Image (tube, rainbow, N blue to C red; front, top):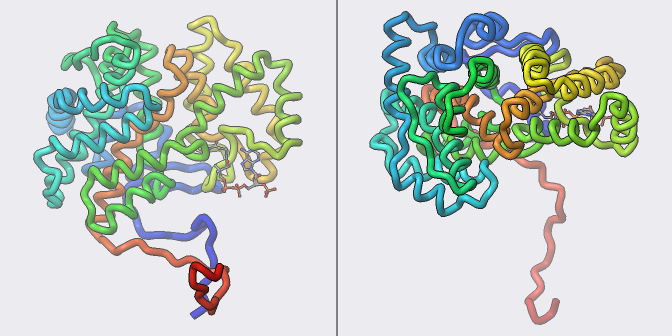
Length: 375
Ligand code: COA
């Protein structure tokens, strides 16, 4: 049978999902039927995590109970902190991957593949990721990790654990919005990779570790860091046009532009654009926003080819305005994406089929074997 080649699995529909809906032509994103715009304006990351994991918006009581469980799981086993210390000089994404793997050794449900246990593990992972990233950041700077505080929200506690002081409300709101916007996005490369691992009926932690490794690449999670480097390199809005021309002439990609699925503006981008503007004004650093909007203008001719800004384009400037170092931009994406990964893994388990595509062989055939002393 001659199979059709689908490089990059572009336009291949892998399975059905109830978690998120993306219309790439119209620039629409829904989480469990709710538009990302409604959620960005009215909800928060913890509520959205509940929505994704349990399939419906929580009642007040359900949200309070869920939040309490997440808060209770924020603290890491001391052994996991020891592991972070051992690998502290690696890239924060490598540290997150290693620590997430170590979590499995201390999770009471690691080998329990029941739906209930997988939901419990999902909740723990959502709660533990921020602590890992913050603890590593402190340790690599020669500081003691800051213990999580149970009176702070998920986003506020993350910033508190990073900096050791209570963050300002604008910073908390920006962080929470960022997590919410990244929470779920269908069969993106990392969620797909997680599904592949889950489809072998391997456990949840293994699937999550796969996802972290996949997110690290600059074509996926690493774009925000690359955009911020580009912004710093451009330095001034007046230099944007020449910079873009030069890059495109050299056939380089402009990071933060283009998307495998969207042929219109990524619906998440507008929220980060606005946050970048507001924070920039407040912090007295409007130049990054100005450079980014200028790059966007200079890239306008590419819109006719379906190349628009994606969520990462303005995200880097928001993180930088919050004073976060560039190498933790990708782990921050992971903190936001963990509920999405978990729900994709849960869906895979619920209706499993081993994911195993084919490759078209293009090498030689029927070669005679030559003994080693005659080669
Ligand atoms: N800058 C310049 N040109 C771009 C581009 C970008 N950021 N993204 C895509 N293109 C061009 C490609 O060069 C290609 O042109 P060609 O047909 O003349 O060769 C065309 O658009 C299609 O690109 P392709 O790589 O086939 O699309 P894809 O669906 O495989 O790629 C991305 C999607 C995300 C990998 C790609 O857009 C990209 O590399 N973007 C930059 C990284 C980024 O921001 N990633 C975060 C995604 S949320």
